[in-house]
Length: 392
Ligand code: AOS
Ligand code: ZN
Ligand code: ZN
Image (tube, rainbow, N blue to C red; front, top):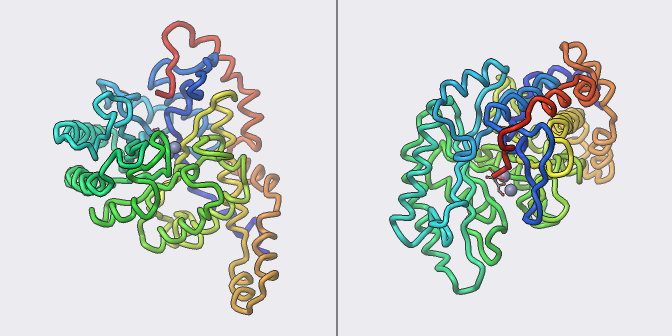
């Protein structure tokens, strides 16, 4: 098997973008719990995100959500982020919290509503020019609840038209990233329910339109790594929203429910050239992001745990002896190939990763170092007054 020393340099430069909303309060439709120390402003969310980066070296950027993270001074917010050692990242649009969108936004039958939703995306693109963001990520809550309620074909056609109008506005260095999700909030049909629909829509737009794969957005039992392989093969995997799920779109800590699935996904990312640090030029267009909420656990440790989980499974996936694997596969050695794969998955890399971090001036054990740092106590005692932000 490949040894850790051989793959250690490939861990250099790994970047996982954090979602600003992970630092706000969140919950289910039953209850949103408040947590001491929760940010009361976008600035405080960014300060917390930068703390995750300081302890792990893995999270150099923060994704923002419009309008949740709106500010009237983007230059100041950008400067604040840079001062803290992070960059502003992906801009997420929002067409799911406005009464006008009850029956659709980009797919709505009323051209005025469609235009309003398109204008919102234009506003997001304007923001991206000020924040220096590359990606506009679009997740649509559009669909219907009852058979016959909507003209499925008409909605798909209007979606294509709206997306084309938005795409025309995307800058040369920017990308439109279309996320899919199999259900929720609509239950009978969703307008972008699967990778095939997202692929069909972005393929019609052009090169700078790509797919976002949220790991929680598939039916149970779906072979997600196959989708990863296919999108990479087609050159259309733009980004990941990483999280874990037991049942639906649970948004739990990535790698917690099924670390083996995360390993399998990361193996296909590496195999397909989607992992930048493993490429000859150190570059890949696949963005790693988290899309998570921490409802009952502490938020900053929740994010630290998450990026460490991604790093740990990346290391294990890099350990797969691909030469031995290919020869076992070609020889039709079913169990031999499986063993090569499982050997890497079963390797405990925690001590090696701790040493790797120390060599780079990072805490060997980021979770422990955070707990001992006093940061949590400091935000709990200083962030009094004001209104804690909720994920929405
Ligand atoms: C919704 O289910 C999607 O996962 C979105 O990516 C995301 O959670 C939402 O847009 C928050 O920004
Ligand atoms: Zn998502
Ligand atoms: Zn989701």
